[in-house]
Length: 237
Image (cartoon, rainbow, N blue to C red; front, side, top):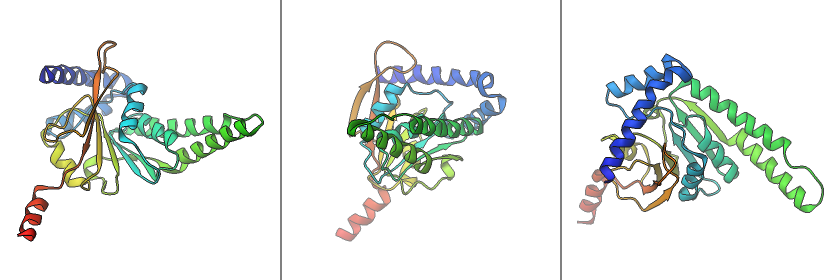
């Protein structure tokens, strides 16, 4: 059953690439088509529902001083929500290949910061506390949210504590992440699993592209590479 759902979801997401030209032009669509032809990890922009985004961040358990990286950050909703939920994070970095989405997400970051700055107000300790919180959130959005226009394969992510992925399954994704991330890094995926890894946690949340049922969020921790394990075993001997 799991395999059938994954195949159906893959077909639905791949079908979305046909709509990319309508919403963002042929250039955006060609980016993803070319990656698919070259058998590289890819995914068209299919935004997760905000309820799913909040659930992913809940599972990630982002802490003050940590770095979050969203691979394929789309319109920036994950990094924006991360900064709102945890203003004391070190950085919320979105990595996006699509130039049109990079521009869109950067505008959304500024718009949300302005909304936070203009909100609040009132008098009394409760209102002042709310106003201070909104100010801190606006600062986090302006200073700690970063949208990088790049292929994630070319981005140094070794300083990431949490990585968020909403992607199409690819046979090399586990190896790629293991090469790019430090052991112990938390990896959160929505809908699609990393087949080579065993999840620490599986949490049901709102369904993907339907109104009924549910989809899952998976929490992984990057394992040590096989080479390190072998080397450690030799040292112990």
